[in-house]
Image (cartoon, rainbow, N blue to C red; front, side, top):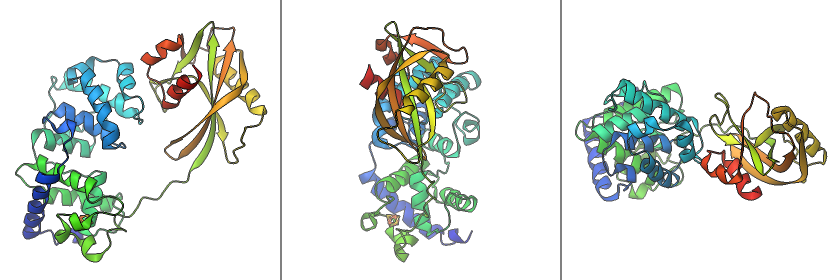
Length: 367
Ligand code: SF4
């Protein structure tokens, strides 16, 4: 790999020394770093996937407070785990945490494996997360590449190919392996992440303050704004959906998403997809109420009177921009279609159920 030719002994010594000196003064004080505990490292790393440090902190504190050990998590119901995860998104992460905790207890006697290969056999643990646990918690050498280090390495190497492609990944993982020192590799990996997160930022990296500027090819060539090459943006699709808070005798209807559905395990009000929303009409045509009524009836098997008024919630999920119309409805029937896992609940008990983010917003606005 030509990109790694200049990474010789002198380069590594200079880079490591300046990075660690910087880390001593500027390393972040994060709650999951307080103790080198593999459980806390694991929970934080899973939460940090697709989520910022600021957003993760309160979730992390609540989660480890409720489930302080892998044994406590292994005994928890998936519903309890999802309730604590509510709002963080990408819920398969929470379901995998619950499954992996059970495997650690049954297959590994409740002790975290200390090697990357064993950790990677657990649900939801990939190469990066395994490397993070092994190096941060056990201080064993294991390379890491995640969003912050991918950007940092690509710039240090002046790598202008696609860093997420097969060739790019090979170069960056090889770099991560070569640059890792034998002494205190966990601290070194944390320093790499912190430099990427706070100095070598996606926009306007602070090169003047960077301890690695003497080793950085992108800085030398003035290409730090074009490296790493950006991933192609997916085209946004607009969708229209409707949810109905169906009432019967003072209680409301909720349904649980089944395995294989996007929000598996979470609860929601009766919700239907109204298709692509290419030309949004504001307000939507009156015919939409009839359409919602018949689709909700098909979903639930109930005869429902849907009110003509509604509130509108807008949100994005991956490449979809969704306009959600939230209605209220009433029914005199109670027997819901057997194909839907449903319950009639008091509005006050919704607090105990893990709801989709928009279902929680609807509950706050309509109930
Ligand atoms: S010199 Fe600039 S581009 Fe290079 S590693 Fe430092 S912050 Fe990133």
